[in-house]
Image (cartoon, rainbow, N blue to C red; front, side, top):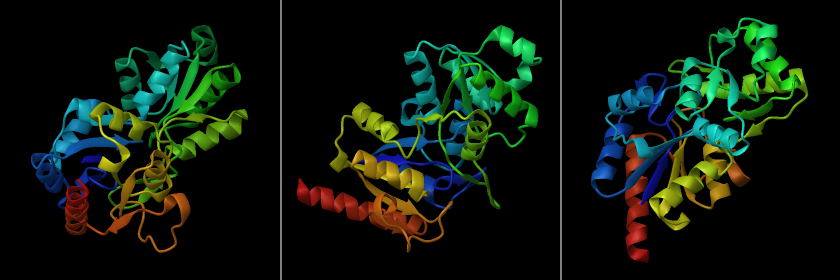
Length: 274
């Protein structure tokens, strides 16, 4: 079985592990399940992902991590755009550069004339708790000048250890309001990350399971990709009682113990079907 696992709110909250989930994933990997982490996160570097994942006691491999930022980079490459302004964190810029793009942060651009001289061809947005009004000003100027706006997600909130803080979607909304331009958004709830994971693992929808904490992104992306889902009540969602339509999960788990029982149930059902 292919387990597509969201990170923030499922495996960890901020730097704090969600109890029991990491060791459970290690057990499932040892039992033969494929584990792929699928995240809309837009501010960490790959090495930081690895450190967080392994600190939770979960398995990690480079090919087992798919981020929305990687899809953003691929979309810019496909459009022939290489000079990218990143309205976000250092991690966002680092991932774009690792993908072969000439990425700069607003803090690396001296002023509006310097921005015009560099002439960015694209703008992307990421979570940045230290963002300033100047960052928004430069990103706005770039989009108004014709730079293509592609964002990794519209996540309204991010699950910090002690509270829900404004997510990437808040910055995307501000930039859209300032420019009148609607961003192309490539991450969940779009199905592309899940479909790519399935293609790379050579499995079908009936062998794939999405595990996430957000009905609006994780569960909706599972519906869009035609796969089953488990909603974890360990992150941005406290209850599944009012969920309907594309936000309604196949099953719900309150913690790692309930998740383990559901995974055993799904595996047994697969064995009977085969």
